[in-house]
Amino acid sequence: MLATLLQQQQRKYQYWLLGLGLSLLAAMLLSLQLGAVGVGIEALWQPVSQLEQQVFWQLRLPRTLLAVLVGASLALCGAVLQVLLHNPLAEPGLIGISSGASLAAVLTLSLSVHFGLALPYWSLSLAAFVGALLVTLLLLALARRRLGPGALLLFGVAVGILASAVLTWLLYLADDASLRSFLFWMMGSLGHGQPLSLWWWLPALFALGWLVRQGRKLDVLALGEHQARLLGLNVRWLQPRLVLAVCLLTAFSVAMAGPIGFVGLVVPHLLRLLAGGKQRFLLPASMLAGGMMLTLADVAARTALTVGELPIGAVTATVGAPIFIWLLVRRHA
Image (tube, rainbow, N blue to C red):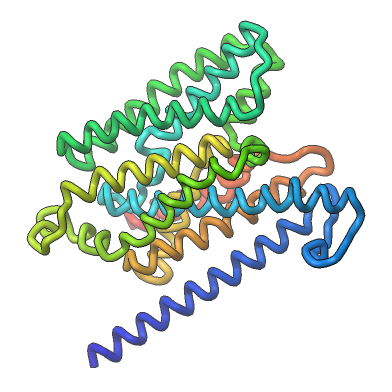
């Protein structure tokens, strides 16, 4: 009887993953075709005009792949943090990495405007990655001291408050031209990471592959640290590595697209409510659903206005904030 129930549950998870995979593929096809210049999907296998080829291969395809990778990274980080911090409402921005990355990026913009420097296109992403890396090193130092997930959470809140204070001063002192660039970066845009080379993606792909294989260990860790140690899990070895992988993926996401909220919070929590909380299912499902969510949000950001585009962070916040409120009400009802 137990074996039959386990097989049914496994089959249900497989159906969920198949459905999410097909939904992600449909979202990618939609993203490849829609935009200021309409490009048919037939550009993949037959010759089209030179303009359509440039739009498809140089703009549309890299942006779609970037949306999938950033969305998958943020959602996977949220799923891991919710176990690591024993808080179902945790998300990547909560531990201060997004704040540190945003502060470094805006500070770089501010200094370049002040000194009249023409920075290369990749400098903003590099600055954001360095800022996130500094926060990561501090988080790892805390993790090695075995201060527990509560200390990591409090540290993230403190970093967020400090970064917000400095950002407020920078925004207040900025001129009108710089202010628009600052705000557009802080609200998120996939346009920042499009021109960057493929080697920027390789650490993120490695971290994604490693994290998604930790489902069984996270199922044990979800029982509590004491119980996990009794079951033979090396918590002291696992926790710093989970923090490092989450920090690297969050740093990559912010460096490539700016701070994008609610993906890491909403996607894992909704999947847990709909299909259960087994991490062996939740981790790959979060990757697929996160990539789909951000891809659709990018389509909305690119097509909502006839001229220009909306910041993608504004789109995810508009959708995610009501869902977050509903989750809070439901949790405390």
